[in-house]
Structure formats: structure tokens, C-alpha cells
Image (tube, rainbow, N blue to C red; front, side, top):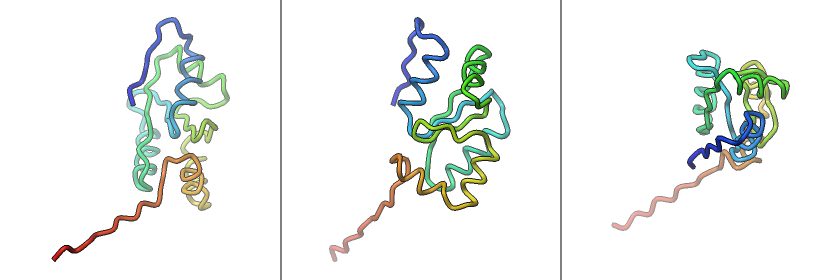
Length: 115
């Protein structure tokens, strides 16, 4: 999915639009090590999140929503930062939440032997 950019859109409106358009999204600063760990954890369970690197105006817009970068949203709801993601994973609630928003599915592959 291409990320649309509307130059007339305020940073706050852009952030809210991106949150609503993506089932799993991480807002990050460039070269953020915590974001890297977030991505690795999500990749390990089979999810490829949308990652948006923010400029300073956009960082303020995300911060006004209660979560400063790196900030993870699943299904439009703020999960928070890395500590909250790890706690969600360790409690066993991450994968069900990802399935609920359609970001993770139980794929069954059937192999048919034609010989």
C-alpha cells in the first residue's frame, strides 16, 4: 500500500490518517534502536508493520496523543512503546490482538502430491 502525502494535511491529521489506515504501525525517529527491537519482535511473530520515521513537527503530533516515538499502534489503538509491546508479548496477548485486527492469520498450506 502506498502512503499518500497531502501537503495541506496537518501533522496531526496525517498521523491520525496513518493510524486508521494501517493495522500495525510504528512511529519512529531515525536510527532508533528501540524501534529496531519492536520491528524484530513483530517480524518474529509474522507481522510486517508499517514504519514511519517522523520529522520534529510530526513527533510533537504523536506526543500529543500520549505516546512519544517509538510509538506502536495496533488496530488504531495506542500500545505505547517497547516496554508495553514486550509486556503484551510475554503475557500472551500480542498474537490474539494482531489476529483481531487482521495483521496475523493462521495460514494453513496444503501440499498435494500429484505423483
